[in-house]
Length: 375
Figure 1 (spheres, rainbow, N blue to C red):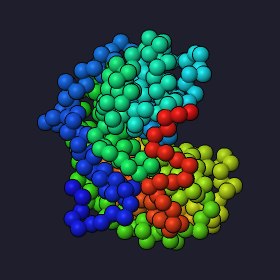
Figure 2 (cartoon, rainbow, N blue to C red):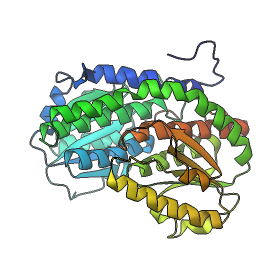
Figure 3 (spheres, rainbow, N blue to C red):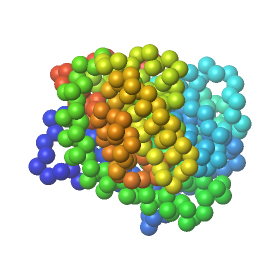
């Protein structure tokens, strides 16, 4: 539910605040009594059964959701995954994946490049799944299986709630795949679902705090000429998404990199006019996550010596990263695979307030349209 008596000057801000409800509606469509609804996933089962890999095709924000999916499907379900730019798929005569299922992701379900890639996959005899926000769309009708997000109408050009509901469906589909492949017991799946189902309420509770923090912070970095967004593992696609949001909303040059790649070239850009946005959350239950966290701490020590302006997204209660950062935003405690749902929202708000500070029509950025239906 949206905050009472709150007004929204732009559709983008309203849609950022609608995300808890959109995620909750999506969970309702795919789960019941803390279990995955088998009737909803029946056609997905038919598309996945007997397949040895997954090829994901998408563009823009949807591709970043696909990159998160790559890690979830590989780590949770043990399925080899490749993520293709939809605009490049049809020009690839061979693919290294063996016996793949094809997963197309598109907010509109009408994206020209993704639709063409889907048609090419069908022509090659591949089973197909489409994740879209419009169940009546071309892609939803073409695919063997349609898995709609429940974001509702999204009017602003920058994707917000359509992105987080894509992440939600991908998370649930990866759990379903893990279950049917024998990688997870029903009890383990249910424990994952409990954590995902906690997201809407937790996000709704913390959104006003994030809004206030980013509204106060953005004027302090308004003069920045470029940004670098950094993340490791499942957080790297969210760094990419944060950079894209900033570019399209505020016309500021921004790039997303794996955190460990900073010293392999991008570090040369670091100065007072190029802030670092670092996704530095961790899951204390996961040894690999803790290792990535320690490496990020070491990197930020070096960045501090270089005088970098650092905005870090961290766990609640984190002090080590906070001491090495200029600004910090905290997210609620959660499993690492769920963190992207939280992390992306402050990045959306950063893009929004940077755009507002530059008097940009954030709902309708220049040269952009909501759905790219022509190449």
